[in-house]
Image 1 (cartoon, rainbow, N blue to C red):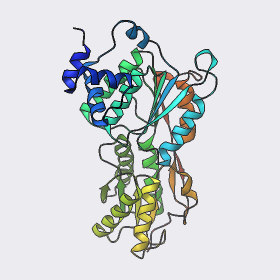
Image 2: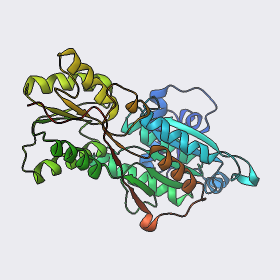
Image 3: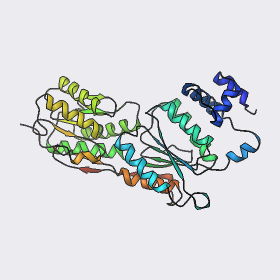
Image 4: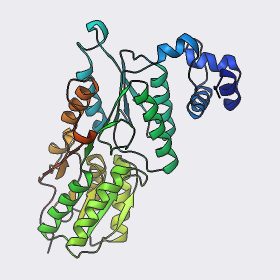
Length: 346
């Protein structure tokens, strides 16, 4: 049965005219109303009829880049690298592609909304950066949306995100588990046995994989897991989590942080508590963001090739580089040992 504009309007509880305004983008509509309409479009898999439907089968010169937080250097570096490969020759008739960065704010709903908008705009390619939300309902909705985009001719590249099978998406996945394991092995080799862990949001694949690598290293060494605190990937979370770890285990000798920004917050909390880094407590991060080498002491971390991964994602999205075998490539991190880690105090 063909889905009509009226069906979408009924599902979204708005008038058909409002649905038309949202889809055509020719009249201001409240953000909440727009999201409700786009959600109904997505749920009903509504497509335009007649000549417009044929037009939707073609692709435009638009490329979407989805990020969780454009203010976070992790996403900014990748987005900038992707965009550098999208401009220039390669568009229709030798023209340029238009890259649009979509900031989801970490919201699964916004992620789907942006993909719906990009589908309506017949995007030539979509690059989705960062970890995925581990929610079965959202995962199913994402898989369905990626399949529909691919079927319409949009090239999809997941950059720093696990693969989504049977969707046509190409995945450049970071080896977060391996990086987490090597980081904790480094601390164990130094002699640390009381290690606290500051993890990211529990629902993110990045969080789970890095934490699994940390725990794998502890288990292999026969060391207790120690305390773990979850929170957002920001400095304030690192600060508050480090204070909580010290409350739970005043004798801990090392802290592993979910990323470098979280590690900075942890360092601030340790200094406030009168503890020296690394003489009293070693601190390690993840990602090797640009500031990590300039803080005092320089931060031990796992370097992810964010810029190189973004460049490669952009080239694949533009068809300038072959797809990896099996549509998936795992990108390893590199352990960077610096001044923030040392042997534990006696």
